[in-house]
Image (cartoon, rainbow, N blue to C red; front, side, top):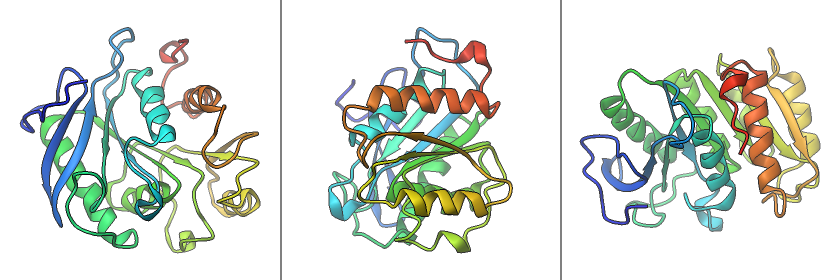
Length: 231
């Protein structure tokens, strides 16, 4: 990875840190092109990390494996640190300001990759921000990993209107699996639910998580089976 800040005028040809001006000051991003061993698809995914006040950053292991899963499918990816995290300026804002941060990242993405379809993804708190943003940005795919449906009011957020994958660890001790299952059942149309026998951070299950994300996107028809990674 290029550890020097990259110009924000174009999408990098190798993973690189990029800074843009966000609504609360500078935002730190990590933009990565697709895995060079797979054919690229015409999509770019913005990935949101877990809770800033509990150690969540764009370098979280689940966020990293989500990024890797998508790049292996040929997708461009952009991870970023919410306000007040890492080298991003500002302070925590209960998901509201963080949604504005994601919208600022989206503005940059549409500038450098204007012809690419938008995907949104998030882990834990990032799932809440991704879903809030989906109702503003209308992505072509949404991925929620361990969405904290009891900690934030997901019920006021409408269906994103796109193929939607929810992944949940059945042994999660941070987010209630049963609450997530009940939430998925009451949504119409229901998102595609995939489960793993894992805790909240998917310890020792990250490779399985990568595979289930890729298989879920194939099942939803977001990518073709021929595009699914086999690495």
